[in-house]
Length: 112
Image (cartoon, rainbow, N blue to C red):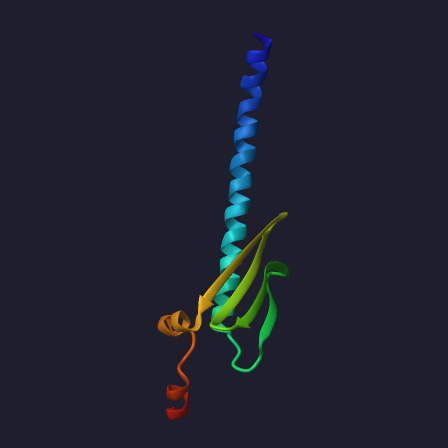
């Protein structure tokens, strides 16, 4: 009986801790996505790679690394929220980046 009461008292604490953990992970993933979107919007024409920290209200949101590869770009974005850190690595081909409008074809740039 005592064990049942003890478990009944600690069950809400365990459930609350798990939901708080999931909330922190979800917010860290959202911050990592912000880093990925920033990287796609800022693909350099001449540099092979770039690194950038996204900071908001004096807090580090994401650490972004973009590297050009043979047929596309590789983005590694680490999102932060409180003490949670999530890293997302994404590869996009140049064809897909052109289709999505992140980079323009050289012919169009020369005409403009």
